[in-house]
Image 1 (tube, helix red, strand yellow):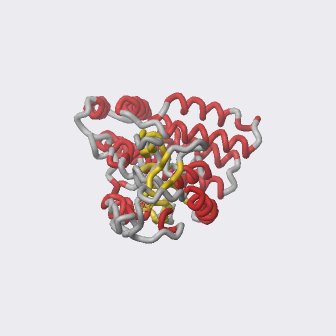
Image 2 (cartoon, helix red, strand yellow):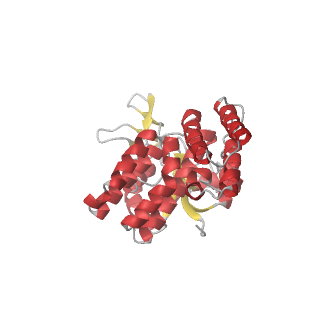
Image 3 (cartoon, helix red, strand yellow):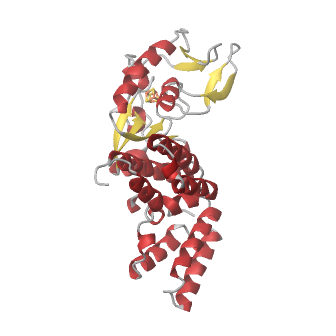
Length: 316
Ligand code: SF4
């Protein structure tokens, strides 16, 4: 994977002064750390629909056909204007080869969940989705999405970044032709990664691939991708990772000495107890994979799912 991954992002998170008050919401991690690994495609729905900076603030207001996007002071309804723009913009974004999108949390245009929606008495509930975010997720149901607020949680951050890399590899597999052989290779490379998220989805995908010849290619791909993305959305917990690590340790039964085995199991147990981060057993396992040239493990993305520079597995 040589070229950088394209990821959409709400422009204000990159420090662009596009907010209603003329400010920005720069997120240093996104701009300076993740930004080294991905190629951003910034989108500001409010400015791109032609609204000025600064501008009147807006919010979601409940309506009979769903929430409306309305300016707070003058009550101008901007819903249709933004939906019309979104339709065109999403067509352009189709060509941008996006593998993910990071939305600005709580925004009535860009927020992907829990956006305040006000009822006729002005009482808010946290039940809304921003108008552009809604249109984006409807158009691209498989593209991994997150918001900046949730990405401060290390587990959710790793989960999202892992998914954008998996999605990129999925697209590459499809672009190669997506033959049955390609799908089987993709599945084999991701087996342990999937197991780390969900043993249930691991079994379902295994069955799907085993019965692949019975299905028409596009239907098979659609079912595989839906199941894969559903499974990967589940966070890889310590318990699930421990299960994978023990499974991996089983591959070295013959090669490791009694002391090496004991050390490996001890390191896994220390991780299980929450005393060291996941990267510690992973480094040791990768050492044995190289030392014993363990071919099946070598190709497992579980052991190197995203660039080491992001240090996503370094938290306890
Ligand atoms: S939240 Fe969305 S609409 Fe608001 S300034 Fe940021 S990018 Fe623009």
